Length: 290
Image 1 (cartoon, one colour):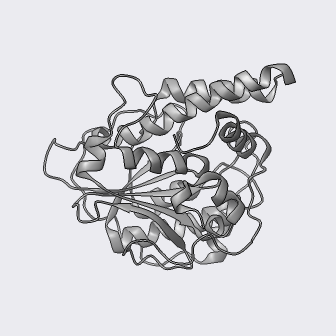
Image 2 (cartoon, rainbow, N blue to C red):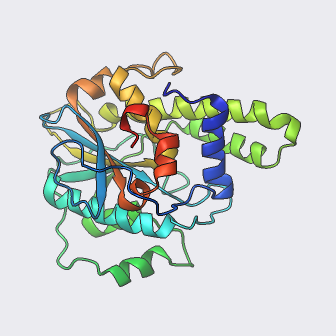
Image 3 (spheres, rainbow, N blue to C red):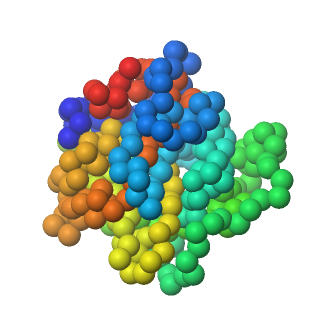
C-alpha cells in the first residue's frame, strides 16, 4: 500500500509495541519546512500532509508514541511525545476549534463503539490556566494509573470522546501481538504477515469510521476532531487518503470517499518524532521523506 513489504512493516509495528525499539535518535529534523498553511508552532509539530483545507469540517491526525499494548512499558520518547501531543491538542482546541477526540484503541475496557446522542458543540470548554510543563510531566508520569495526552485533554477541555475502532479487528491485533511475542522462530513470519494484514485493515477502518462517528449528514453540526494514532500507521493512512479507498478492507468498510470528499485532513508529527530521520524514512511515503 505504501511501498513497504509485509515483513518490514510488521517489524516496525512489532518492535514498536513489543520491544520499544522505535525511539527518537535526535538526528536532524525530517522536514525543512512545514507543508500547507496551518500555522501550528514549529516547536510543537510538523505538518506533513493536508487535503481539502477549505472544508468546514476538519480532522487532525496526530502521530504518537505510546506504551506497549502488552507490557504497558514506555519507550524512551513516550513521555516527551505525549507532552508534545497535549500541547498540540491544546493549540488545536484554541486555534482550530477542535471539540472531539478520536483515540486509537480504548480509554476504557468496555467503551462503547457508537457515539451517543449529544448536543452540537463547536467550541471546547476553556481552561483558565495553562498547565505548566512541570505539572504536565507529573500527570503523564503518574505511576498509580495509566494516563496519556488524550485523556488529559479530554478532562481539561471537556472534549467529546468518540471510539472509531472495530472491536473485532482490535481484538485480533492484540491476540496476534501476544502470539508473536510468545512465538517460536519458525512461526514468526506467518504471524508477522497476519499481524500486518490486520493492521492494514485497521488503518482503513479507523479512517472509514470517522464520518459515521461524527454523524456526518445527520444534522448541520460541523465538528473538528483530533485523531491520535501510532506512528507506524501513518504512512499507509496517508496512502489511503490519497487513494480515497481502503484496500484489503471488509465490503462495508472499504470506501473513504465520504471522509476525503467532506472533511479536511491534516497529518501532524510531534516535534520529537519529526526529528527522527531514520524512523521517518522507514514509515512515511517516499514523497514525504526528507
